Amino acid sequence: MVIDFHTHIYPDKIAQRTIEALMTAAPAAKAHTKGTLTALLESMAEAGIDRSVILPVATRKGQFDTINKFALEINKAHPELISFGGIHPDDDDIPGKIKFLRDSGFKGIKIHPDYTGTFIYDERYIRIISEAAKQGLLVVTHAGADPAFDEVHCHPEKARVVIDSIFAQTGVKKPFMVFAHLGGIFFHNDVMKHLIGTNCYIDISCSFSSLGSWCDTDDAEVVEVIKAHGADKILFATDSPWNGQKEYLEHFRSIKGLSDEEKDMILYKNASKLLQ
Image 1 (cartoon, rainbow, N blue to C red):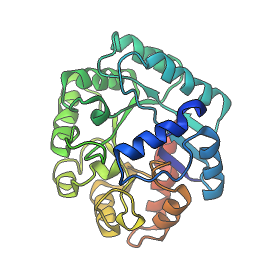
Image 2 (image 1 turned 45 degrees about the vertical axis):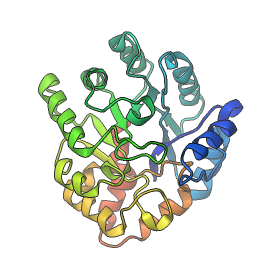
Image 3 (image 1 turned 135 degrees about the horizontal axis):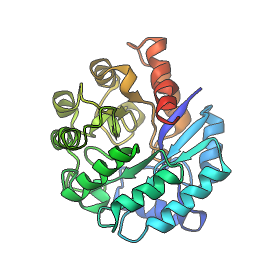
């Protein structure tokens, strides 16, 4: 069993221009599929991935209905796919929108501080994450740098402040956040200092510099994070289409320093618990 906890797709009618626009904004990024539903299913079949979590991004206020309608259609039609919901920090009635997502069967939401121009510690994100934690939804956030932006809106030090603040506000004890990209692209030392040992999950998307993905961590540094944080709080993830699922999975399986049990936890056991 393999679960990819971080993928993206776009509706067929906008997929091509969305991919082209993203590659124009971030020349370092390379799409490995066409970014469509069909392309993801084909990629999963080729790679031997059983389930993929799709993470939609609301880039402006007012996209909630459209984004989540598409996500609901995916969840109803494709049991091998689990789309999270999308929400923007400027959306109205955050408690009501998160309740709608929970009642509709969503397991979590995705936020992208860079694409909304909003720092992770902004009160609008604090409100979203706190409400999601109280209602039992996970929050997956982009973490660290992004090739399309100069400013970093989710730095590990600030992410730690958010975790501590929301825990103090809500009293929710189980992990309620997933920090993508090994906790923060280009901020490995800060991840080790601020996020390791906290009550959160870390995904390993865009983490292997040898694959040409936009990051600076090597295999040894990935293993360092896993060992320090605990394999029970690490999630296999590729960020497809921005990494090839087959290539990424093969590389992860080949890295040294992790036991078979640790790899199994990362590949599917941890995700299976979160997605129950």
